[in-house]
Image 1 (cartoon, rainbow, N blue to C red):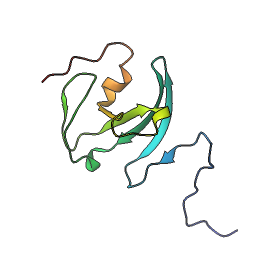
Image 2: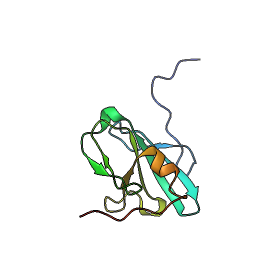
Image 3: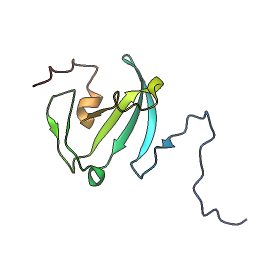
Image 4: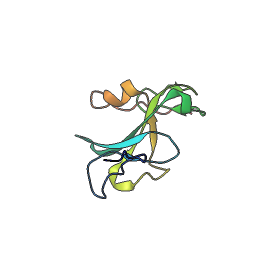
Length: 102
């Protein structure tokens, strides 16, 4: 049998992770008490901007691996995406988001 040299693409509507393009990682859907979320892990080598984590209100500096999450029903609208530290994302059910500093 010949070897496949191209990546296998998930079937539409399947539960397999899907690529978001640009080499930025794979998206997965997570169910939690706070709803359905689409979550993407971003490796540190691909981060070039600073973000503010809504879980701890600390800066996520360039080069820091983190996760990007948005409501699953929103299909990744830029306004709904939030960048979180991995630990803050995992602990979000144990605490409330902090108040935003201005």
